[in-house]
Image 1 (cartoon, one colour):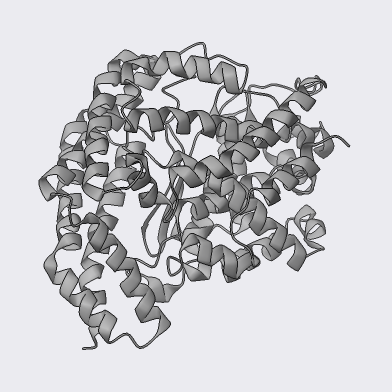
Image 2: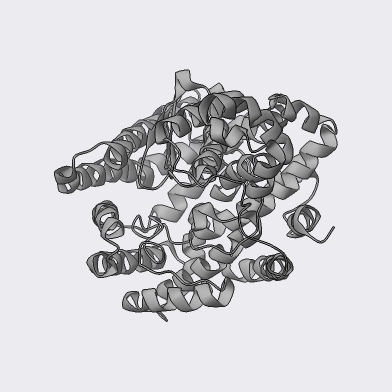
Length: 492
């Protein structure tokens, strides 16, 4: 066998173990009975350890060295680079510690669900403190030069640092803050002609399914379920699942959430078959993955053209909304109003939510912030960034699952995803100047086709900056996003 074939056979076992982890996690978040928490955490911890031990094994190091020396194709070299990076970064992490980290996070996620339901941060706080301690230890094992947060960022966005984020974030915050002030001087309340509900949840689910199918989501390779916090999870080739959350009084939340998760799923369903089980059947980074979700949710889903397409679907599923008219609904979908919940935030204020989370979790990881201080710091930060204050822990510090899952360093991916999305969508528009007419008629093929050709087909073979350079001709910049926001939401 060729050296690359031996490497592929080895890493496939890691990928298959991760597939089992994904299935266990999906079941836990969707339909597992509450008393299964402890056992499920142990099972996921064991599976993750088995995969991790194979990742850091000297045997993999030998296979990588042999494959690197005998690499014949770009695919061979991409495979080696991907697994060398993972192998080298993780070798210093003890398996016992890694298993305990996973178990701690899985248990914390279950407690978070109960705490969020009861709006009780005190219930969750000791579990979060354990997660923070463990994640800080992980950063020490991984190693860093300037900030332990850099080690965690590298897990989600290769090459990203705190210093680079401090360059990218301020201009985005400045543009958002300026536009919030502009819209605050105008009428920003909901259109009085818009019926506020309640709207049947099952009708919302049917509408979401039809929209997902229209943009290209393949239900023969996936499914749509409910969860406390929406997510998309790629189980294995041919099995990419979406979960969503619906609000009887806000149909925009469920519909835009479905588009967001659908964007993630289209990426996973569009990866090349030849990458299956190799590790390259993944995104270039979490920020690039988020760009796909944010592009479909915002650039497409908040456009008036999308709502013209949606009109006949509303007549079938939510006829009370259909009588309002697409122009009013499009304006409502693009309304700028500071709000409490990140996942329901408009495009202009969304990155202000991310700025707050980055500020808080950086303080936690660098040891400047205590877990018990989070509710108060959250209140103060929401007032400072958005001018609104949560009335409960559920609306505030408990609204996201990420910290429970140990995903410190992930939140900046959402902001980076917004920047990537704007830069990519500008390239889509340049390539397909007449696409909006097609979207109004329910034809999304020009958008999906461009993304398939320039993003999805590359999988994890390129690093984010390499991918952006290849797809758009430019490195990542906040300017396309600032320009996009100003054109859509600025003074006319």
